[in-house]
Amino acid sequence: MKYTRLIGTKDILPGETFPWVALQNILRDVSARFGYHEIITPLIETTNLFIHSVGDVTDIVSKEMYSFKDKSERDITLKPEGTSSVVRAYLENHLTDLSKPVKLYYIDRFFRYEKPQKGRYREFYQYGAECFGSDSPAVDAEVIQLAFHLLLSMGMKDLILQLNSIGCPSCRPRYREQLVAFLKLHENELCSECKLRAATNPLRVLDCKKESCQAVLAGVPITTNHLCRDCAQHFNTLQELLTALGLPFQCNSRLVRGFDYYNRTVFEISSIFLGSQSALLGGGRYDDLVEMLGGSPTPAVGFAMGLERAMMIIQESNSMAFVEPSTTLWIANFGGITLTESLSIANQIRQAGIRVEVDLEGKGIKKSLESALKRGIPYLLIIGEDELKNRLFTLKDLQKKDQQSLTLQEIIGTIQNSQMNSL
Image (cartoon, rainbow, N blue to C red; front, top):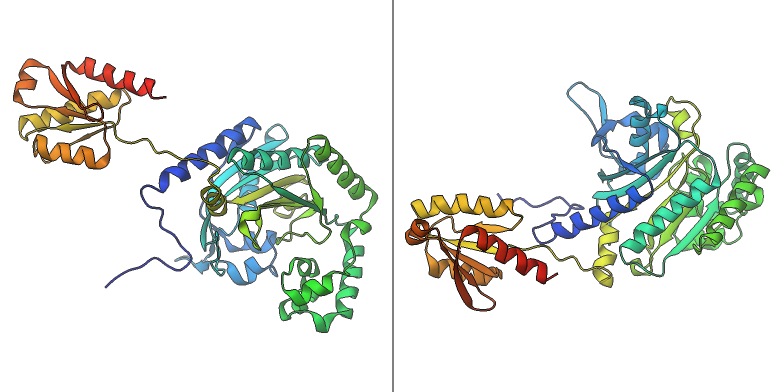
């Protein structure tokens, strides 16, 4: 029987893994510059965690979660997003006791049963940053600054930041009333999904991409016209800070996020390379989520970025060159004691930081030379019985097409000097 990968999943093959590692190193480096610390949470969580935090009428919970019962009849879900798990870990492990703000980031794997499309899979990787403990708009500005810095560090250009405020529990109910009334007037013009959303989660209608709904939404009440004084001041200050930081933005009154826990600031950063599916990362404030999950009132803000989409843009735009270090030295031998000694000598050379491969079948010089040339390995080391007896080994430079008889330490020095000169 022939087995194939499941739809919506992807094998990352040799030759492709190094760019992924390099990208993750960039994410870790930039995060550390902003004072963020990595957190790793389990792949599975209790289903109720996401129902309670993300919202039971959101698309993720109602349509896209991979949920099942384990052998103890517990309701378990493969993580569809990161913020809920980070908040759970923040509370359970008493990170609440740390000095505020608490800055955390993750690089993790998630699962959603949605239609695969360009740069989007059912099993996918995300980077996310979460900052707990301050409701200052300066925190929002720095989180957005972190997002920009990450993308610019990947070589991306011409980024578009869209910004909105969806208010707080004090002012959102008034906006919700006007939005529901507006949607009711245009009910017959909405798609079937938005007719349901209008009754259960009306803000989500603003995010609909269907043409019929887009036409209706051209006249929808504007969120920022219905903010309370505190939310309006928060949003105005955030815009002033972003301007002072030189971060260009567009206010988009119809921008919302897909999770129920968001309040006040919401934002997305887009790339022209993604076409209609342009959002590269998005996030916002979730000041009530920590309390919703059993903690004390704790303001928080964060964002998440899909790594498949980021990698796709990097590759298509050639914004970064990922060059994987290759093997430097191939050791030829003739089997028997020469193979045994080759393994020992290779270990000593590796300890000096040099990448080495050994002919593990002891096929001699001709086969080893073919292997080294085929793989683009610049040096060939020959270990025979005479070499072992004299402790002088033949080192062939396959690029310069010359050779020397050297001690082991001279071989190490020669290769290290060559590597230094090539930098």
